[in-house]
Image (tube, rainbow, N blue to C red; front, side, top):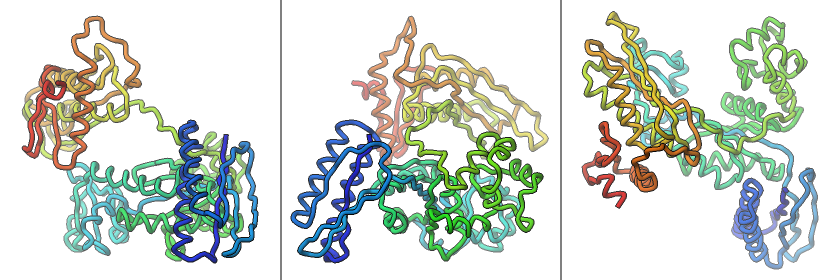
Length: 515
């Protein structure tokens, strides 16, 4: 069941009053969108309360109401009411599909610039784990010919000559900034699909068609003001076209960060200027197939060429995804917003060592830390493990003797308990360890996940599951605090895990936490 919320716009009202009324009506609209998304009666009741608040705010200047409509309602209705202050125009929120794609520009680099405004306009590179390769670059660095994944040792001279600032990656920090971006988007748009750490699809069909582009520009401004991250927005009737629009907005300064491809005439003008390999889902292999087919304009493949391709031919070349892409480029939406988080099939925490590991103690610490992070992720995603896999190996890029091995084992019952995960991971690591090698990497992987609510208890279970689950939830909350990081030293036992703060400010034991 879909709902319709009627809104007011009146340019004759004083600015302050119009802004106040707009804020009230936007709150009602967001509540409506959340109610429609979640579909529960409590959400619908809260939305109705917001509408009632809008009624009170409007007073004698007009009226706003909530109504339930059929799913096929997809049109605009306008009603003009004479009022003492002028005319109040009321129109139904459009139900046409309009997607927005908001993408953070050079996201990792932009995150580093949040606390280093002096880097504005200067070349910056963010490096991978152990500072080995380039994973994010400012445009100034891209203009110097530095490509994604370039090893740092190959561009040492360039870095020194151009005075490029280097930063080690900080993925926890980047994730926090990403969450702030999504929260800021949610303050203005009720329906959001978080596509990646730096991209989100927005449902803009709930807004009047004349509001969409101003809303996109306001989103950019608010994100830059509240979070400090520059963005670009693509607007289109399909997700694939929204991706194309975002690409155009980034590459062409005249669009000032927002490109709108809702108009067929605008698409006809701009799609021939977009290389086909910039279309979402078209990789190198697909591009080569299209080239052999002769899909070319003046020797350059374009998005317009692909849109003109027969969908059956595209499907034969690139499976069903290719046919879907053709329809999407023509303005026919085939990909709805994914509002439900996909079920995770596996979790892995792996790292390369900054220096070779030659003794068991540092290797054991690494296995313990990775297993701890794995358990934390499982609890965050509300899943539990059936088995665990641990591996370690030496480097293939030197003349050292090579060794690589891995081992897996099943838990007695599905679990996301840090103590159990660390205990079994360490036992597997001890089985794999061989003296006399220089190890370069190890990791902990979970390949079989189930919802944490599904559990087949072990016949001879010894642990108090309820108490331990409460304890780890407390530890997870403590770990979320900004000044302390609690880590488990489980050893080979699952009981009595000692937890201490890295800052030295607090020491606690699991037994105390469960008390």
